[in-house]
Image (cartoon, rainbow, N blue to C red; front, side, top):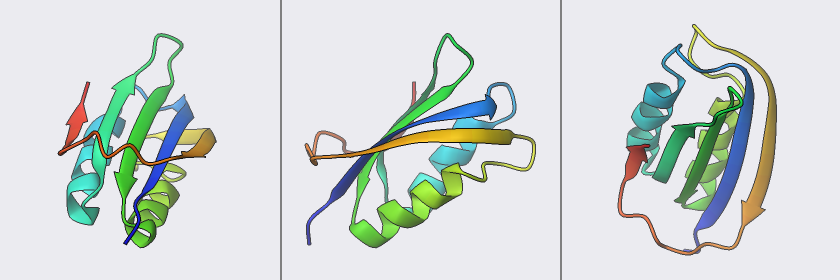
Length: 91
């Protein structure tokens, strides 16, 4: 089956609240490969690839985040898969 790739930038109270660890845990559960990283402007960037159902479920979780976060907005772009990840990492 074809993979789906996404790039998301999450805005709100998302740094210093375990957001990247939340993404890593959920990525492992859903077999999403990619990364999450803090950006200098206070947002978190998440890039990943997975089977379509898992990718869509994972992306839906980005709008919620962990309980300690407050997600205000998610900028989401679906991209052409590159198959360049072998696991999910925190950068």
